[in-house]
Image (cartoon, rainbow, N blue to C red; front, top):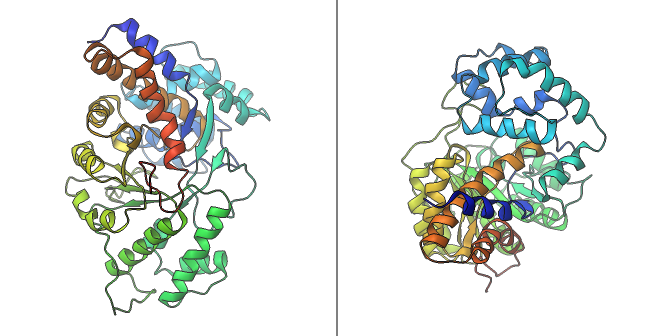
Length: 425
């Protein structure tokens, strides 16, 4: 066990590193929360409250927002042991002036009033950015997002492609694609031209990545020669072929491809909004071997939903030059799991091929507490495994932290055609 003073010194130095957050769901038009309701509406809180006994009723749109917050904070007392509750306390302390170590239902009205007073300030977004020391926020943009009205150097666009791969057969998705590209897609060559226009548009507007979340049973393979695919009929072959076309676009336009692997949608059918999706243990990165072999020029930033897949992700990142281990996604973003998974990655993967963390946040206020959670774990690992066990200097350990949290984001997402994570063609 590393000394507390060493861990504290490391954490303070790591916490001074500006944040480049390589994956969020933040809207650049409304990046910060405007009320306590927007904070407590984060799906972690609604799904934990529901799991602990709260009905769906308080989550109805017509339910009074202030009373909804009171209700959620009453249920918070049933899950105040969780990492998510710790994020909430840190948000309240950092941004609302809360001076207690934990939140109870009796604090609901005070927190509501403080949020109303502070979050409605015209410069609130900038206040949160400054206090969090945020330098860049990577977005999740639908393919028909106009990408206008924000600074792409601060809010970096990313082409999210789930709809194209899994819902192209739906008429409304093809209509959106036609509106975005000016091409009525009815045949494969028209789809290829439309996708090419999307890539050109996104790259011209500052996009740095393409991204998709994938179910455990997805197997990316190239289209079979001579097979004619109906674009209005759902099939595994259509999804695989569209996905392969997107990988070709990443290759041609020099974009990394973020793969978030292993999510089943709608498992808990009675769950709250965004609290229905889960994982299983059957997926394997072996399913992606043809993809990784076929596109050596594309950097694949891979996140896995289950911590049990982490050794496989380490092995693939160890062997394949174009596979990068990325963040700690969703159900794995808990300190105990991060500590195990991160320690393994640091021991097995080149330091230039690690994206330490991303917040997956929907509002700016969540970026700091989630990154701080990761920073604390990273400081503990560096103190124990590198300084005390291997004799590294503190400066060298902090530089490793800077590499995986800051420098790699710039290097990996500033790709050019023909380059990969290691930097060479």
